Image 1 (cartoon, rainbow, N blue to C red):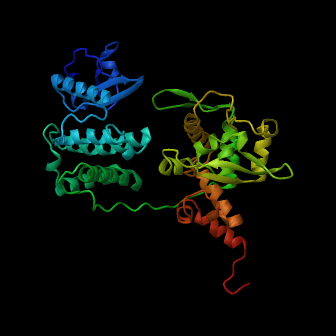
Image 2: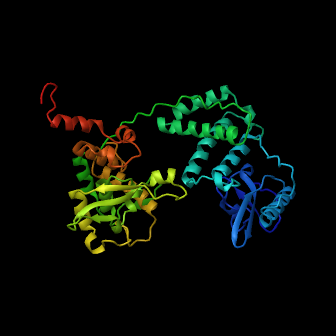
Length: 425
């Protein structure tokens, strides 16, 4: 593995833009990085008044990178001093691989003015760049030399071949569309944000139809799954030979909380005893949930109050809360699930999804359901039993709820139970 030229200089580092590792660290070979030279960049890291400031340097030449670092250092010490009245000509790389790296930096808000920054999750950035890199992988597979392929070399013919390449490769319309959307956004960034005079060949690609056909979990299967949850025969052996215990003392309680609140998995795991609201008689009236998905998209800078969801009371939810000793813990800033365990909420969410699938198979349930289907089940029941699902605030609009979360077969079943008649009362 080759490295960029490096001599120790205060504030200068080499980083891999693929995995984020510093490559001048030599305790282990290349600090565990196995990615090629094309993914490496010089990076400046300086401290100003105790605050860490970073910048990815444009040049891949050591001496030029040092000059950039010193200019950056001077800027930090004189943030409002204009060195020259002439405008700085922005460096615009032409190689496709360099444009992808520049796009990755922009998504991470590197050198983006504060008022233009958008907070994006690491998962979103990673998946977006992965989808774009799928295209470069395709080009390499077609014997295209990425060391010379420029963004201006892109043609309709190449895009058409990639479209054909994706069709059998993607197992779902959603995966196919994610790949196309990422490339559309990448091309739009180059045109709208960086001023490249190139066509957006991906703009007019028709995305595949995603058939929203939500299914809910029937009562019988749900009860069978709950009965299967125990610490007996709870070890799953993966294809790699790795063995993992899928049981935790809170597994059943956590799955029931997801089912009886209708919140997303991670949203259910952040519910606390302080979120329980009692009525005037001291009985459970509702719980206050937080719509994390909405907040991450529309309230990324925490400038507004988080979007709250009022979770309605049910007998099943009350029975679960009694089992969780809510009366003794009422008002405490403590999680309902695994409140005494030092574990990240996202980790529990992933853990639960895996456990749900494991115990579903153990219970002999053949339907293609996951823990996410419990939200669809809750909203379907809320819709058929009360008719208030559109006004409960579980989704940003009634259309999203009705199209993506309501099991139509269950609605038909409920209509039949009500004795619908064309000419009847």
